[in-house]
Length: 318
Image 1 (tube, helix red, strand yellow):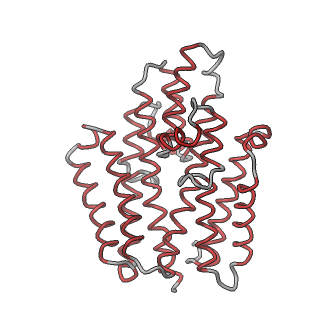
Image 2 (cartoon, helix red, strand yellow):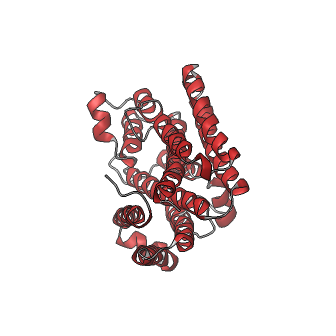
């Protein structure tokens, strides 16, 4: 397969997944901001959204303070922000258009309709009227795109590169979300645990689980109150949890094996080693050495993996 074609398919999937993850993150913050909480804690939550995506410096250049409406506007509609939902959906559609021949009609039309529809919705003020419903729509379109790819495309290299992009992006996003949300609970705003704090904690952890569609899964697996260490275990180490780091890396390794070439052995080795580390890790060991340090290192390794995949298979970065 031409490296240019592989590049477009890989990035089409990464941008679609990124739009979904941004919608999930904004949705969970929007829902928790409706709970009774101090202005300081609310501000910290919105700051976390920008930190997860490494967009705090860019945001601060444009706005004087962190305000919910401005953060949402910046993360949803601002085309100068390459990680905003509208920018991601546009980039996904442009990449799909460049390789229409490698996609089925259904896969192309799903991407194209999503782009046309999001523009119509933003023009007509659907987002301002009901942010929660808008975020659900973005998630649904991403699910649809993945489902159509899985249900209509020949399982050849085009399919594997598209899956590779999806799961590498997902591993990156889940790690960022877990890191920032756990970090928030250890912040100065959460001191001695009063009864009210414990209640807030419950909503906070529920919100994190809901943001990765894991609330019902948690209940099914643990049948217990929500405990931070179990949330970490579910989202990092459980192979049977679709958005966990372990499950995402397993997909990356499997799809890498299907597109391997003469120069990709080292990339495969590193991906396999990262997966092995997740397979044999234990959550108590991770928490003992420090979750933030663990996830920072994981993100560095995933980032390096993305760079190596680009080098081995895709159009070289200019």
